[in-house]
Every structure is written in structure tokens, then in C-alpha cells.
Length: 211
Image (cartoon, rainbow, N blue to C red; front, top):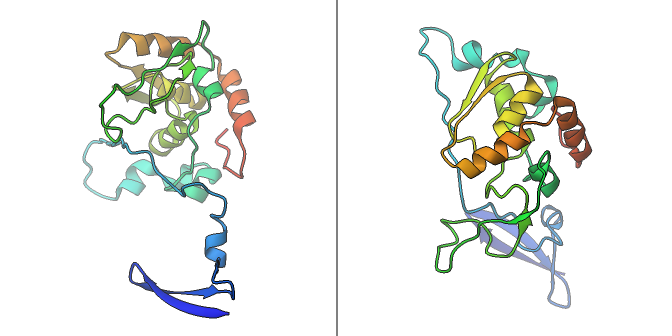
């Protein structure tokens, strides 16, 4: 058994190599065994801006967040939440009609600036970046309370509105794309109870329930 010291990003790491010359995976690497390419975030980002009136005393946590009033399951993970992208069932939930081809990159478009995958795919909800209901519910719970108004100026397929329905918030939807407005209008016809049933079916891998 041979031990080898390597420098990785400024840290000294010790690896072991057996008689056949193969490296033995350390325990901290084994949890990634079987993954095809490791963790690869989508090459796109969205910025969330939280606006509020100025206040003279106290902190944001004291005046707005009111951490003690948050549900216990959110306190456990605050300020982070791990949420997988929505499944097709969640994206299409509440929609009728035939599936359509989703928008794709045009030939020659840079994949890092236009992140939609360039492969054939169909869905009833053809919005390219549908958000998880659970993620929007988490953000709404952090910054608002029941009865508050939520303004979404980039409403898209209406996920923020679905989260508002679940959490008893009022919702104002804005989007300049008529096609997305029609999708949101149909999705928002579903009942609160049906949404709860949908999300409870999706809870897995030890994720914290919001409802």
C-alpha cells in the first residue's frame, strides 16, 4: 500500500494506492461514486430583489423576517433549502389540452446564454423555466404572512400564484407574454386541496414538508 500526498486547492490530501496501482477512494469521495458528472448547476441564474420601506431601529430580522414566527421545519433549514426542479406532473398539473413542443435553442445560439436543452420534448406547460411550487412557497413564507399581497411582475407560468393559494396570500400576476398568461390562468384554477395532495405525493429523500 502506497500513500501519496497531493495539493488540491491549497489543501494537502492523502491518497492511498494499492499494489495494482489503483487509487483507493477515501470516504469523503465515496458518496459521489456512481455519479456521471458530479454537481453541475444550470448555466443560468435569476436575481431576487427584496424591497422594503426604510426603518430607523432594529434589524431586518427583527422588523420583517420575524424568525420566531416561522414554521419549525423552515427554521431547521433557514436560510437554505434544497429543492429539485419540478417534475412534468407538477408543471402540467391543472392543464388540459394536447401536449406541444417546448421552445428550444436555435442553431448557433450559445448554450450558456440560452439554457433550454436542444432536444425534442413536449408538454402542456411549455414555459421554459417553470419554478418548483415548494421553492416559491419557501420564499413567500420567509418574507410574508397570511393575508399579505404578493406582486410578481414576471409571472411566467403562475407558480408564485399557486404558492400564494397554498399559503393564503393574495397574488397579483403580471407578464407581457400572452401565451404564458394563458398557461398561468389555467394552472391557477386548481384548488388548494388538490395542490396539497400533489405536493405530498412528491415529498421524498428526507425533504422538509411545507404543508
